[in-house]
Image 1 (cartoon, one colour):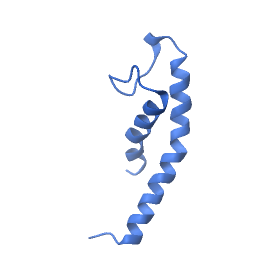
Image 2 (image 1 turned 45 degrees about the vertical axis):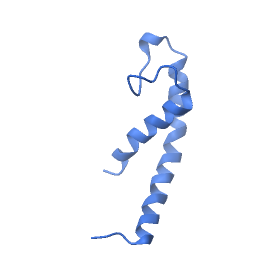
Image 3 (image 1 turned 120 degrees about the vertical axis):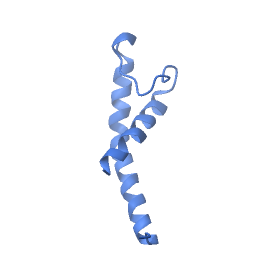
Image 4 (image 1 turned 180 degrees about the vertical axis):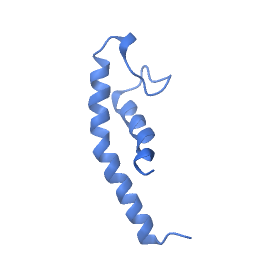
Amino acid sequence: MSMTRTDKNQTRLEYNLVFYAVYPIFLVAVAFSRLMPRASRWSVSARDDGKSIFKVARIATLNSIPFAFM
């Protein structure tokens, strides 16, 4: 079964709405975690040290959004 153009646009719209609703939450969480000592921080990936908080928040959002559509 193939998706029509309208279905694809609707799915893209839903994805973008979820992304823009969740991104600020992760941005605040990452900013707060940067204020904590390094030993007690949570990390999105093993190599997120040195990355900007915006990039880490984007990675966290992109990693969590698929679970909203399951």
